[in-house]
Structures are given as structure tokens and as C-alpha cells.
Length: 123
Length: 224
Image 1: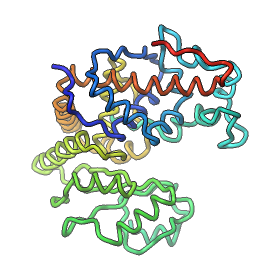
Image 2: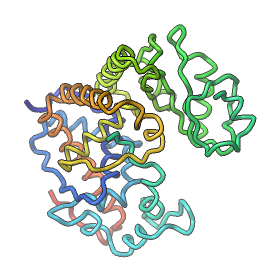
Image 3: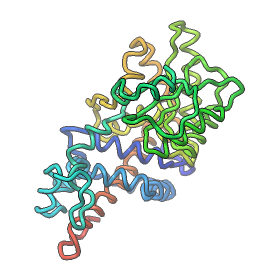
């Protein structure tokens, strides 16, 4: 049985998935091949993930998620993020909330996101 | 605990309060307040003007607001509360029963099942709904990693849900949520397929952010 094409994908479910991805430790996840996902479902997922709340949540957790996700065995961070930005991602900002030029996802988020928000998953 | 007690002594506690009764009007959160759980008191089934006003004011002020629905409340319209939670901006939490009888647990189980169905099938939901959201989070991790050796460190989940039920009942509750979630997404296989789609979509967003960070001169083509 495959995923029904009439399912609803809410912002909350996309936020839950984002938080799940940000709460994983010591496990790398290879970016999934989503070709088996029905097109209608994929469109709804993309629509939910493109909402402002979800994009902000992804951006907030970028430092962690980019280390958890791998593409052909290499983390997103290692593959796409330039070294000088990696350095910023690894350093807590001297000024909370400070934004490096063109890098508003950086600094305190990487180190603090899970300490502040935590994993909500009920295991 | 009464809201008026927190207002009178805002420095008491660590800024996190649970099971608070809104007994006075308040439009400015007490200093230092970070998270507050207001107890739902049903009566005629609506939230009541006082509670609603306080929750709106506090949520707008940036406080994490949770509406805590005791299991003993029997006149709760859960789909309605999920909608209001999104509109007002609060998190919804169905508290486990205080009464340890099997009847009370069965009633709670039915409420959580109803809540699970509503949460995953209502389109305009943007807030967390405990315990469904946090269990769904676990199922995502399980689907992606094959195991889920991650312990929750969210303070609210730890205080409100962990060790609040005997293990056997906790397992039954989780099994019920899993069953409802799997059923909605087309079984375990359907849910895992959906999870792959979610992972793929979030991954694309992460790669896009990485490209933004790279700047125009360091753009890297994303893998297809």
C-alpha cells in the first residue's frame, strides 16, 4: 500500500519533521530518493515546507541539519558551505543574533538550537 | 497555581509554569516568563473570554503558551481547539489522566485517537499538539534512521508526559497513535514513503540555504 494521494500536509507536520531532523545525533541520513512519492503528495509537501514558519525553522536548525544530511556520503555542510561560513557556524556569536553578511542562518543557531528548543519527540 | 500568583511574584520559579488557572485579566506577561501552560476549564465547551484574551496577549508578546486540557474534561471539541490553537498561536496539550483507573485511561486513549485523526488531517494546523506531534516526530526519526535512540530533552514534554503513565499504558497509547498515523498515510509503507518525501523537500531547502550562504561567486549546482 502506498501513500494515498489525498492526504493533507499541514505546516505543523512539516515543522515536526524539521524538528525531528534537527534532533538526530550521531547518525547521518542520506538524502532520500523521493521518486516513489506520488506527485500530488510531493507537491503538498513542498507547499508546506515552503511556508515561512517552516523555512524559518529549517534556517534556525541549518547548522545541525546540514551536518545530519548527506549527499553521496558527504554532508551538506561539507559539500556546499564555504569554509569561512563553516567557521561561523562552529563559533558562537559574540553578539547574540548578529548576522554575518549574507549568512543570517549562522552563529548562535548552530550551537544553541537544540539546547533552547530541544527535541520534542516522545520516545 | 493561579495566574495572579505569578503576576504578584514574577521572580518565583524558572520562567516555566504549568497548569495555571487564568483568574485575572493580564495583557502584559510577567517579567521573565518564558513558557506558560493554562488549564482548560470546559464548562460550556468554549475557552472563555478571559482565558482567550490572556493567551492571545501572551502569545503576541512572545511567550510560549500551552493550553493544557485535563483528561477529565469530557466536553472538549478537539478539532475545534486545534483550529483555535493555530489562529491564536498556542500549543495544545492533552494531559494524561490523574485518575489511574482503566476507565479513565480508556477515555484518554479515545481522546488522543480523536486528536491524532484531527491533527494529521486538518489542513490549517501550524502549532504543536501534544502528545501527537512529539510522537509523530519520533516516527519520522524511526522512518529515516531505522532506530530512534534519541531521548526528548524538551522541558515541557519531559515534565508533562515522561513517566506520567505506567509503561504498559504508555506503550498502548503510543501503539494507538502509531496505528492512526499509519492508517492515514497508507500503512507503515505509506508513512515511510511520505517520510522520504518530507526528507527530500527539507533537504532541498537546506541545500538552497547552503547556496545562499555560498554567495553568488561560490554557487554550487545541487545534485539532482
